[in-house]
Image (cartoon, rainbow, N blue to C red; front, side, top):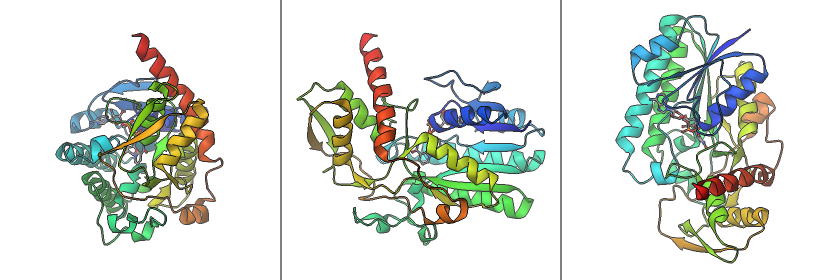
Length: 323
Ligand code: NAD
């Protein structure tokens, strides 16, 4: 039986990854600062603690592990990452986690790691045209990410790659592009745009109004979480180190995303555009490399994932309204 450590297992994507690893027969140790908010963890062992602390990392990263999945990060949507208010914490906290985890792997001789980077590593100047953003893996240098979060991800990609080179680790790096789905943050300021739009529509009266940051013409692609986990597992089973994009290439504006959510909700609400953090004008996963190396592309359109996500968020809104 393979043994895996999943860092950030109290969070959204890693919570789903734990379920997937369990369904494949793994023994899983999950670690996080907090319990999973929305579903009891399916990890065999769940350890609460702070991965910024090297002594805690030394405790949980045992020599008997076969694989480490490093998804813990100080993380949020545009309202958290693009205001500038959290930049020092975002860089410090996530870099500390990555420095500790990869070095403890070296010390314990645990060789195989997955590291979750982000589309936020790509240069801002290639993402100014909402209809034709460029996010091919090899366009990342010369580096010019649009956020400090992106700079930390780029640093940590290089950190893992250099440990692989100098200490013979087997490292696989993916750059996630806007992953969404049930059991993710949907309120409180750290939620990302699909969850925020679902929440706003769920909270609105039919015929009411919701707020959208910016003109809503900024474009993105969104990938359903089960598809992401499938791609992560294929990457880990391959001999391809990456970095590789894991995302959807179905480009949609935020206004059209809102319209799709309204349609799923069976509600008509109007959009009020207000100033707010927006990030780049366009971002789209370029899936040519992952298609070539792993024969992977999303199996279903965006709407399918939203049809599973909206009811879950509407239920959370209803539960919150009662308490
Ligand atoms: P998330 O915030 O739900 O999960 C991250 C988890 O890390 C949280 O549960 C958090 O408590 C934990 N964590 C933070 N600091 C910690 C610490 N010091 N010690 C222990 N645990 C700590 O985020 P997510 O959306 O599931 O993202 C998972 C990973 O994927 C992150 O590395 C993120 O940067 C990356 N990513 C996500 C997306 C996306 O669209 N969700 C896009 C690009 C990259």
